[in-house]
Image (cartoon, rainbow, N blue to C red; front, top):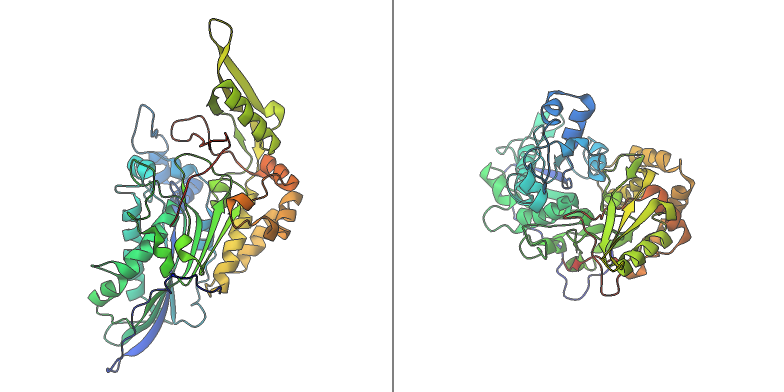
Length: 447
């Protein structure tokens, strides 16, 4: 582990207490996974099995900014994220050095298990399916699993056992990464009901609570109607209380409403890498062999032409895959322009590379992830020579800042065209952000 930076707090733990009774000690590791906005593995599984829950929701239209707003089935139609993959490859055996290991997966904002999706949760991260409620659900389920834990076939009980050590790990993608960070605060620092108090309410004395590993894929909060800095509101700097933090950031995510919250407060304990791709290239959820057929950007002809040239130069599109259109005034002068994408056959294997990076880091911190995860990922990656080259040389492409990201690398140009997706488009809520130089750019907040 690297040295702590000046002024950075060491990991927060509860003070240890001496015991004078005859209760037996138990050590527990609790792994909490929070999925991204509109990502829900239970609903995806319902779609795959075509069960009654899927059939009941699939006919309902869901439009955030359209004429009809209500419940829908978008979360059923998405692909699995890297959070869902991590959940599926956690070993059921206790982590080394612990008597009991429990795992909690919490579905993403905007979704409800086996029910329709929620507009408010999707749009602004609030309400029944918002960030705070998902955090509370995850913590409540964690407490339930802890107090119902088993030593072999024997259930623990508060009359015979006390919790000598509770180690918590949190993972999250997108708003799920926001939820994971907020959960650290609630677990350790909540004034009314930190997890130690919740366990005490069930009769369990707990000597020590700690947050060990925090694994984040591209933290986006977008909480409330302002879509701005939510660090104070959601305690997103709580990552400073973890022993180790890994944040994998999408270096090519530029949507206005997808501002990044970095892990600056975890300096010395945190590693943050900018990886190729957009939000869900890094966190997962795209289907394979998808197509893009939508308007990309509109505005003055000069700005639209410059952006089109940039997208072609970076490899996103070939010349015939990005249509340029103009509108003219009565004097036959071009006053308005827009571009339209027409790209086909985009693969979804790239997300296996960020998944491998996260799994390796988590395993190094003692989290019991099966080696089958890497075996499956390697099998998928090996089908594509460019991805295999990238995977074998990933250290070169893990930039520690967006300015250090090798955006013009020839390999990345090929990978963009065949494997990475364009998340921004000329659609309400999904517009790209540009800096003063006319370059696509992402807002970032210190967290």
